[in-house]
Amino acid sequence: MTKETFTAEGGHGAVPVSDAPVQPAPASVRSDWPLFEVFLRGKRGLNHVHVGSLHAADPQMALHHARDLYTRRNEGVSIWVVAATDITASSPDEKDPFFAPAGDKVYRHPTFYEIPDDVPHI
Amino acid sequence: MTDDEFTAYQSLGEDSEDHRWAFGTGFTDPLEGIDASVPEGVDAAALAAYCLMLGDDALIYSHRLQQWMTRLPELEEETALANIALDLLGQARLLLARAGQAEGAARPDGHGRAEDELAFFRDEHEFRNVRLVERLDADFAELTGRLLVFSAWRLALFGELARSRDQVLAAIAAKGAKELTYHRDYAAQWVVRLGDGTPPSHEKMQAALGVIWPLVDELFRADPVTAALPGVAADPAKLRAEVDGVLDTVLDTATLDRPAAAPTGLVAGHSGRDGMHTEALGYILAELQSVARAFPDATW
Image 1: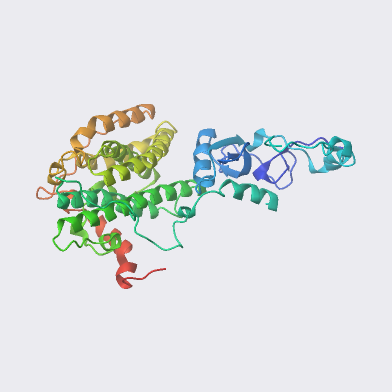
Image 2: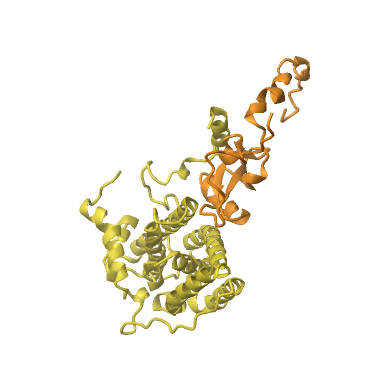
């Protein structure tokens, strides 16, 4: 198998970063700002959830844009932004070797325990 | 986007209320349910005129920002400025509604105009906004430079008004200050980015400041309405030091020079606060008011 690297372009899963036939050759001056992925934590949420992506010149601007694009309806109390190129994503070709072996190992699921009612967040 | 992801995003905003809709559920009085009385010893007519001044600033500037929609360099900036314009429109609604209440309190028959009447059925000379907000931005540098000046000044003003003797005005100012802090931050970020960017961006930003600066003086000019409202209105001259401090910090960081341009003169001793405007306001009102005047009392 050829070793390719992937990134999480626009939250669409995995997009190759090299040897992609449709990718234009990198120019010295970018016409587009780089892509950032946005994660929000809601008021009642415990962890940050990926909500989408946006273009910005740098992380600080990305944070501002995220505030304007993704928290207009009172969705969040905390925002993370991360450059899409900094995310290493699993390859769709490797889906089976990566994930299939876990499918038949029922004993890994903690379904044989009774969860007490007063233990939250399980 | 799969259903799962969509639900995750939806659920983040689940417990917000209906107020998130700007349109579609009908307009109601923005000050509904709030004690409308004017505090004792306060000149109600002057309070009405004062709220009109501040409301007009927000209404006209909001319209100018809205005119940038579909013309901005990036989709993300478009949303940012739409948000800012909407914040200002919200401030305008509250202030015009308060102006109407105070107007009613000042008249023997108790009738004050509604916010829509004030926004859509007044003519140019009846508007009390400063001339800074009327200008048509020539480019993005002027947009961000003017937004910086306007929001820095208005934030200082609202900081003072949050201690106003008129509780309604104080509450409007306290709410608006949070919004303006963000507007100022947004504008300052761009002024620094452009000023301390490439030689062409620096040159354009500096030129933009030169165009805006003559209109800054008017923001700190004393006027009889403010003078008639001690303890209620904020003395514009007192805001100067705070605003200058903020602007100097931003300009220093952005490696920009503070323009030495002479202030735009008064017309026969009158400025925007007296109803004397630049020709730009007529075009704004023609656009802003045309639908309401063609279809009075229309709702949607």
